[in-house]
Image (cartoon, rainbow, N blue to C red; front, side, top):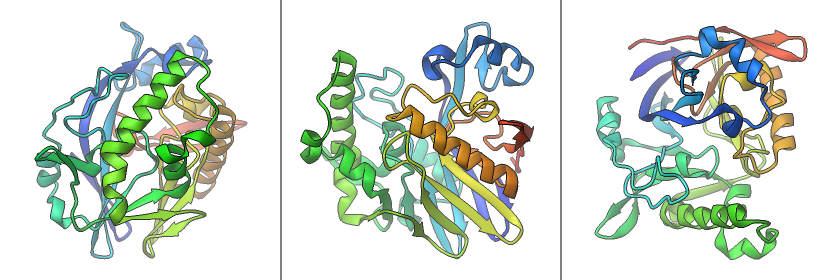
Amino acid sequence: MHSFQLGDVTVIRVIEWQGGFAPPQHLVPGSPPELWRDNESWLAPDHWRPETDTCHGTVQTWVLRSEGRTILVDTGVGNDRRRPRNPLFDHLRTDYLDRLADAGVRPSDVDIVVNTHLHADHVGWNTELRDGQWTPTFPHATYLIPRADQVFYDPDNAHRRPAPGDETERLRRESDLLVYADSIAPVLAQAVLWEGGYRIDDNLTLEPAPGHTPGSSVLRLSSGTDRAVFVGDVVHTPVQLLDPSHSSCFCEDPDEATTTRRRILVRAADNRELVIPAHFAGSGVAEVRRDGTRFRITGWPTGTA
């Protein structure tokens, strides 16, 4: 667990899971092998293990304390989930709530839950299984959910999406239904479905960042002279900072995701915003600057252990 201060906002990192995800060519299709090899000296071992050719990362929550409120940015995988398409997370059991407690956060303390988008590894602890029912984990929280994603994944709207083109897509749709049933539908009574933008307080603002999913979003922090942007899955791995033209295999619209990623990184570089993705290992935080049409990483702020 690491924490740091940005202006008047305290930021605490709570890791649910860390380990190997997938080979680079699976996670970031089209990223050339030399992009990884040429940067091995700093990609390894936190972000890539050359000996196994495996991308490494984390599933984590960023806890923000701002204007007297406790805010969670993404809620990880969750316990007891049926995730047949992802053996890493199928019926996962972790001590996540104990780790939140170590950060000084009890479920009843949480005021706001931000889901940057509605993929399984960002919404899992929205709920927990109690007496056979999926129940909101954070009883007093307002869940901020992008309306575009809620509409896209709502099974009542399945007829609006094109028919699955192959077996892989069919299984992906089935997985989406499981996630919606156990992690989204049970919290809708406590949710705000926002669109176009949403201001949480004077320090924090949500903005659309579509492509990874239709409702994918980023959370901007601006307090005093400090700036940061929590980018969710706009960026999965550091090579996407070096060359933002490469989208992950999980992006619904890879071309739109690329456009969004470049836009977010240009602003971050020009405004000196820290970039805080959902899945980076190491410090979890990157400083970026422009390098022609690409970007370079100029630092990895570590905070305080």
